[in-house]
Length: 399
Ligand SMILES: [Zn+2]
Image 1: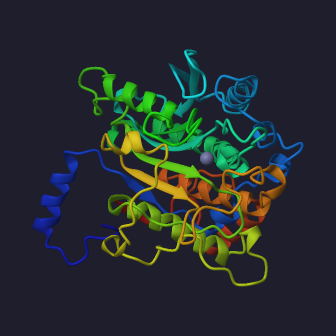
Image 2: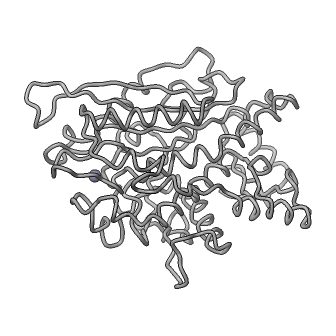
Image 3: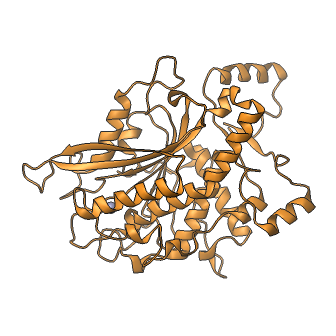
């Protein structure tokens, strides 16, 4: 599945080429050590009291309440002010719940996306980064710092960190006329902050995943313009990366799906490289086990442990490719899970920062931004000495 077609006959390569030409192809390009070392850091933006990204999310945000609206406004403000080239949408639905009697509770999903400026919406396959932003109805005062305030902030930081790179890359493609080579050009990215993931009373098919169920259904029913590459907004999701329960120290992340294990391995490889380059703050001096415990396994060696119920389920049921990044094994969820201890003070901020850098790196590789990311002065000098100026780094994989 990965890098090369080494050893195959030219005829077979030609046949494979023709085969793949008839389908949207996902290409993926590793970024260099110099770029990894230059990735932006959230700095004080993850301060739990005053940080511009994280602190506004660290509050109760039960669907339909003032806290929920305030956090939603925070997302809208952030994208409008920091990422003005992104398109923002809100998707609304209502539902009865087991605790609200006859009342219809509103659920609002936040969607932000960025496509190549010349592309028709229906022709763009999007890397889709997902976290839920609602907090649990009970216990009263539950903040849900790892569940999922911190994952929302990680995604915000990652999108801000690759935004200028996207602009540069697409501007270069436009100038050179490469936009007409549509396979690579029609690659976009989107963020889903979903509402109503949590059950109000006890988890069931009806009492959970309110926002995700509504969005998956709507995007499955909507039809893109005639002649579009992708028939529906749902089929435009090239990979659904769901982050949940992240922000505790020393997480353990399992690989759940054979068909996306290649992408899991990319995250595992990036984790290893960032550690090797001393870019992981949470590592300290002691050797730590890898977060991505299945990184050295092949896709047929996965344990087969059934997938966890989470926001990906309504999308998985409709055939969307899922990468579920959740701290859930081998000893269960983090010990603060669904207790009042899942609060700001119990976040391991170094780990939250490391996650944000790892997600940035993955998004930069997926969007093929080597040569377009802002380099630190030190890294640029090293790059010139080593002759790895932009464009010369070319570890590209067609998948
Ligand atoms: Zn939860």
